Image (tube, rainbow, N blue to C red):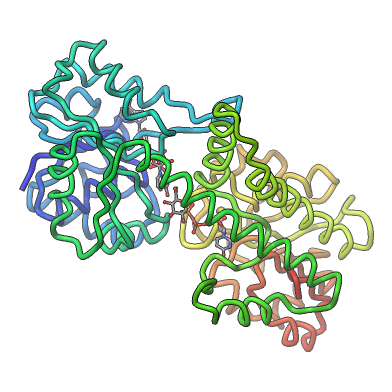
Length: 431
Ligand code: NAD
Ligand code: UGA
């Protein structure tokens, strides 16, 4: 078993730290945010992730997991240092590596000979080399230190399960002996381990996210076409998905993809393609379809409201970028709600997990304590996130609360026939 440092205790870092401790390693996790470190040290998980509180408790109790403030305080004793800090979208679409660079500079003087720095943050092709150069410039003896790429494929909401039962583990390093050392950390998992060069590992991560985004934009485009020709996209996807070459996954139509990764990673891949002189028209189309899909939901809301949203009270059900997470980053729901308010609607929202700071993100938004309160007096209800709880609402009661029984179901969560039987004017996506 090995000694690990994990830098950045967010969705990826915290999951990595807790799961690596479960696998038997000793982990010191560092964050720059002292409040977060204090909470984690007390066993409190500041994000919504199924199974994480239990794993954190287990790690703290076994003393295989502890938390410190500052990367430099985690690095000195580590055989492996995992970088799990943000790589947000820069102004030109590229991945902003400033967090990674800052950490590399900070840890360089503390690294022991033989330590491997593992890039788990999503970073463009060439970043392994960038980290090597920064470490060397900041005083690390680079001949004695390895740098590997080990991209992460977990999804928010199911991060623990995705980490412990991955479809694959990808490790990229131009020195095979370093890659083998990293692969041994995952020995406890039943998953294929792909060892490759660093550039290919980095590209695998972007290609995977871009492909999943492509599936979503493709099905959204088909859904829009279904609306024009009176077909039902749900039936279409069912008929497509039985073909094992296509499958059922990531073909749920909706308001367009969001979250902290697909939007920024598609932008970064487009930027990288442009830099490389490749015209990636296909991916540009995926991004354009997605942007228009958000706006299409606003069009649907306006049509349902009779042509204008001005003065219309809208009940928004859901604000997070998908169900079972508290993450609001690049949420389609937030985009839609902002646009509704811009067009003069009064929006009262309910979300079971969205943090209260959502009010700072959307000026003018009001929050209600439960879905029925959000609906009171509203002229339109819009389901924006596919929380299971919304599926099981008492829609008779919802109808009674509303001023007008009109429902926009951007997630195709509800049964249109049942809604219409209850007297709703129902609008979904592609059906
Ligand atoms: P996050 O914002 O949830 O967490 C990042 C953490 O790093 C924060 O707690 C922040 O305080 C901390 N941090 C920032 N600078 C630091 C520093 N100098 N020293 C120590 N800690 C520092 O981010 P995330 O969602 O976990 O994403 C991290 C990376 O993983 C990104 O590159 C992302 O693209 C990638 N990724 C994310 C997911 C996901 O589902 N969220 C999945 C796969 C890959
Ligand atoms: C996504 C990938 O699924 C992970 O493999 C990857 O590791 C991660 O990005 C990352 O790199 O950060 P995540 O963003 O947590 O994970 O969420 P997803 O479940 O992939 O959903 C992303 C967006 O696509 C959401 O807005 C979701 O509602 C939407 N989506 C997803 C659809 O509209 N239709 C679908 O069929 C699936």
